[in-house]
Image 1 (cartoon, rainbow, N blue to C red):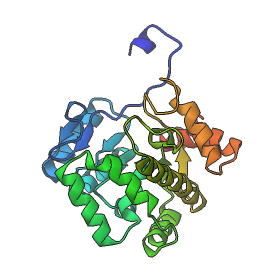
Image 2 (spheres, helix red, strand yellow):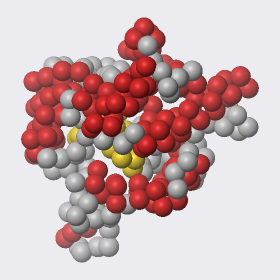
Image 3 (cartoon, one colour):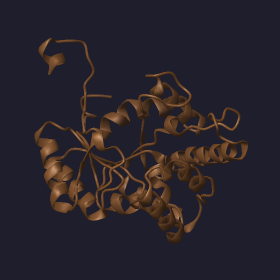
Image 4 (cartoon, rainbow, N blue to C red):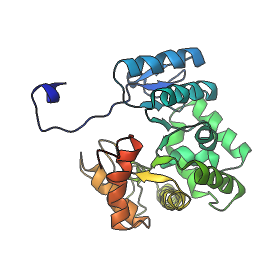
Length: 262
């Protein structure tokens, strides 16, 4: 409103409002908690009424409540995106989920059910279990396994938007974080490389890759995450033009604004 009122040369800002999460939220200060589908619908409608131009599902929200948020977004024709760790991305994409935040959100969709449930239970006990667990999961992934092929079939049909945020998860064996052992650093680097491979594979299967990033990432200065993301997309096999399109025209499509922006 300040930008518009003062006619400032500022960015167009698209906001989701607080995350819609389940009980024991990962980031309480940034979230609203929905204990059931009815509360999820109320939070979603409240966010939209207050001006949200998209909604974001967070990873502890149960499946039934997540489906309700998706329904609200589709009714208002605004994007619904999700950070998933505990829910199967393929199931939600089939249910109409518009976009997926973070390539790690596909983790449990790509492993056998018992392994997926073991990971889910660890994260349910402790949100921080995902920080190292996601790298172990990805390092061992079979991107040609039956679970992966089932996901690819859904992606080909639905063509979701995917905001991989590779720069957030970048790990290097030659530059481990402080306190990380050589063995763990190697596993993390292998897991990250698999994340890059999956990002490229999903694009080839029809997913629409867009550029996003956090305020801070491991291997870029503050505020420069988008530039590192572009570099990592190219390092993952995208052409420079494909990476630029992910940050411009495809990103505008993610926001239903491709007729006017991008």
